[in-house]
Length: 637
Image (cartoon, rainbow, N blue to C red):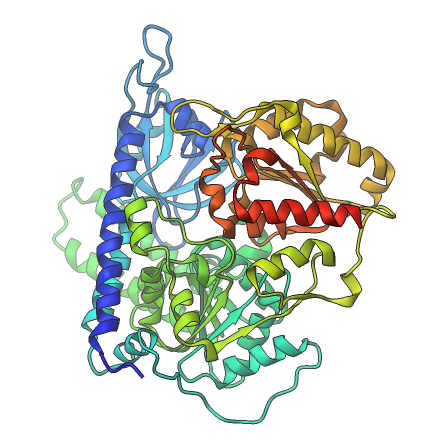
């Protein structure tokens, strides 16, 4: 057993130093993005909407000034705006020489003021701005746009969380910090195994492990093994023992997914922060909607309106009782707000938010017996500590063999910033980990390579899906060697990305041939869905354009989605086609050597996986050589 208690503190200090490096790198990247990168490039990357028009301006249920913004062009481009992200309004006009504003050659964009995304739905976005912001100047502003702003707030929260964990003494936070940083055994309760006949043996074992954990438990869920099902069951059972739990994840999408499943199970969820999918079902369990639907809310709204009018009219007439009136109204508003909040939080069994969202003022001073962190392998360790401060014990669920956290600084990545808390605990405390071993998604042949390479061959296909397929005598995995097209990868614009035009063309031809074999009627009747994946965003956008233009795919528009690997995380399709793009004489494959990303790509398919890749380039890497040999061997069976 390790006795050096300073070592866990050293680990966190190291994390803090690396986070500082990442912070500086991202800040510099943002400066270059706004100063050097052209506006059209920012729009294409999904970091800006331009031009936009404004809709209504209003105070929302939380008394925040909100502005509605509508995107009027480039509606097909996937964007990076989501709840909680900071943005800045700007104006930019075509320059006198006819060149586009902000492209580095024309007129420069003029930044106006900042705000925060409240929610996005299609081409409509609602942005919350500070009280007193000059929103009137947005109406009819020439060349108005919105772009992402540097996210200072999340970094501040992470630094603060690490500082508190480092400084903690003699409390639960200090205990968990020291436990997670040493090989000291985590404590457990002892009671008889509970039976859950509707779960498989490893899922049942995982739920029991969660219930027994006094300190920490890890649910390791490889692709398709029912991690969310297991986690929902563990949360449901925990709520038989505790009044309320905190459920967090790194992304809004992951929080939405687990929240929706809990709501389906009949659990009262209170979602802090707005969901990614804006539909009535998702909105119905958000704090904002519940707050606005409360019977006391109309009265609160009237008082807030009276406060605003009182402030507006102050200069128009002399009123000695102004301050007393204002204080009386504000006091009444606070009282009503506290009453509504007490009821909403009192009724909720699960409080759900992103890790950063757990620092919301709404959750200030709140403590929870159990914190569940879903997709924990995608979260920076510092982000986890934001939520851990509020909890007595921590349950982590995810898969460190799939997508890692996003780290932009090469130096910080080499230093270990990308090593997550989940990875550390899996390594230091293997006894706390339960691996889910039965998968329900993929044909056995598609699954086997991933199981052997990443999970020691321990994952098995459930009997009912082992031989699933679309066509009789179909080969579940095929690799089309694109070197025969003599296509080569090329860069599109500065900082934008790689494409391979010949491979994109061949990808569509291969998919068209496969659709023809299945037959149009069957595809439409059975809603056979297809995912086209490329690790490169530029190739994704090229493939989207080409599919839109090709007449053959028109009837199948709703069944074919094209996205990056990250965009497909947590999803599955009947058919997956992967365009690897890389094709060069040197055998360079760049970030495709991050094999966790490829593990995600090859495990999205239920019945058919088609890999498009230049064999001479890709097979210089041992992983891709082994994968290619495995596919060829399967085709020969």
